[in-house]
Image (tube, rainbow, N blue to C red):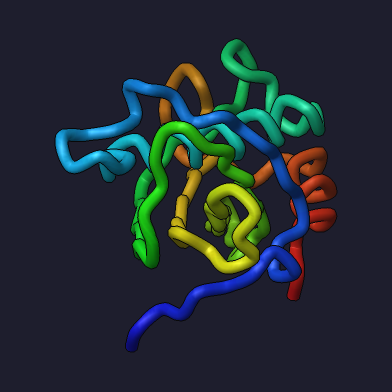
Length: 144
């Protein structure tokens, strides 16, 4: 099944970021690994702003266990990325975020990224239930 492009209306939280010279590869567009830097930034920035996880020193932390990126169009320097964030799925100890990356003024995604965090005890690294503070915050970006 082919993943389709989405638009800004499909996301609940947004953050703008400026592309950097070093993001480009020899082909003149943003290298595929850099997409994940922007995704990691918007997810963790949202977690910090909502005080739903204490990063990096909290008792419970989120570890990335799965990612998937579908590319639709190029992004490069110079430019502005708008990262849209929403929740796709909430489990007992995990949450799957979706991030749409939009380039400059485009309303359609240049890329859609699935990003799964598992909540773990910061010492034992064993999965734990999603904390109530995080569950409450996740509801604010749940578009379903």
